[in-house]
Image 1 (tube, rainbow, N blue to C red):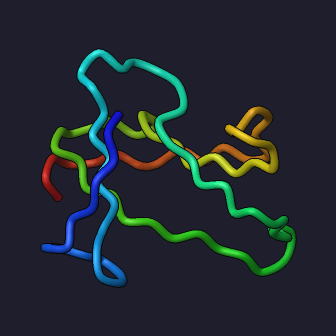
Image 2: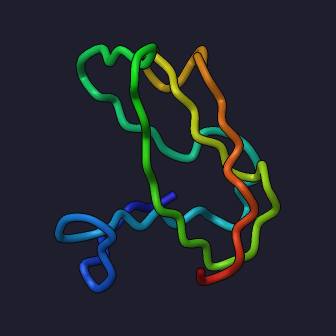
Length: 88
């Protein structure tokens, strides 16, 4: 996987992250962000993300994983991302 930025169509701030996943990738962790400090997700907490895929993907192909260990070794919560239409 390669990571780049795209300032042509940012959803928030000055640029969007562009993650390019190799065609041979079939399963596993694509990317993660370590927050550096614990975050209490038991109260009123939300996560927002915008995903645009170059290919249509069925629901559950991508997941948002919430974890408190390095590299998402033991997920606390795994949320399926809904179906995606190409270039939308």
